[in-house]
Amino acid sequence: MTALVFAEASTAGWVIGWSVGIVVVLAVVALVVPILLLAQRIGGQASEINVSLEESVDHTAALDELNATNEAAEAIVAGLARGRNRLGG
Image (cartoon, rainbow, N blue to C red; front, top):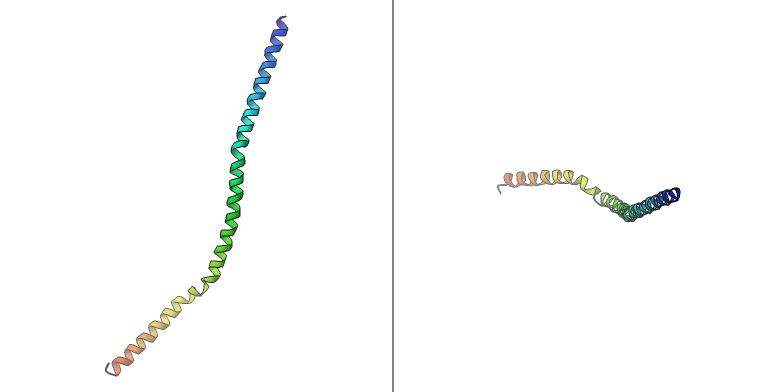
């Protein structure tokens, strides 16, 4: 009779242990799945942002020559000012 009571207590421990384990696994899955879905969404947006940035680089490539244009404009304006001074203006 005593052995039967110990056997039932031992089985109850296993049932409680498995139940707690299943609850913990379900809680982890419930927390990890939304994180993975959000990471997937961020990855998709990151590729769209990268494409947009590459287009921006192409569209602003001409600005690299802006300093040369400014230097040429300054030289022209300085030449015009010298010409005006020589003419008495």
